[in-house]
Length: 370
Image (tube, rainbow, N blue to C red):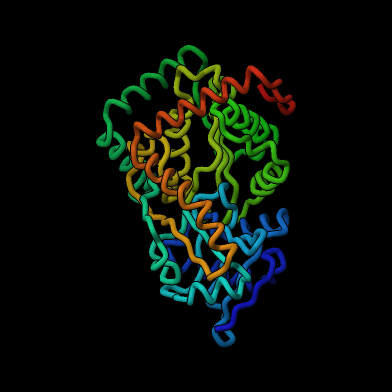
């Protein structure tokens, strides 16, 4: 085995083609956050993004994208922005994980959404969890039947609100895969407002994340693309979503809605319309990610699995990192495991968001945002 480390945007076309071929050969890698296009875009925007290219003889057998931060601290590509990461390699490929870290000049590598069961990292997994998906392989109607079985009451409520919304504000329609940049800016404005209201960090206050999102929106290949959807009531945009897709998997990324219409649950209504259009477009599954909101439990019709864990080489930096991160990770796991604690934490953050809104001036929204 020979490992070379380079920047993803410096890979040649033959290497990029090999990356795509390896991804397609393993169903567990069918996620756009594992695609070479995402790695290349990240590499062009952030100088700490790298990829280890693994050779066996004259053949490339794997790619390991990662971020190298101060003191050799390694993080998954995209970090908090992504819901899937791992080694893109030949099925069954097993590397010496610590030797891989050494080749990458990393002292530690911590992961929380790694494709579960990858041989290189399996012994370092400390927790494995399901990421719920909407499975359309048997068709949209089969998925809808599963949703009804999961919770007939919730489905009935959403359909009632959908009809009421249409009567009071105009016929509902969804634009799927819209290319309009102003529509994207409107969605990001809603999302920024949501982050502030709920006490979260506004990701779109960071220009590079806005630039990344715009670059992903511009990608429109057969194997990788940005997908922007917007739900309208009459001619008024009310809820939308921007995500990434491979040829067959769409990943949930940035959903948001206009709070003026919150009483109708426009975000949930949008998800139902998006599911129908995605299934018709050839998408086999919509990955909603692990943990979080209760709606995932009744919209799901399948799961994929992701893991948390940590690999380290003996060093002072790795020891300090472990001491600082372990209590936080344990606390987060406890909160995610208990719905009552998750709701309580969410309420606290929302209260903080309301307080912050009263004490700080509102940021000017992009032109065209409501």
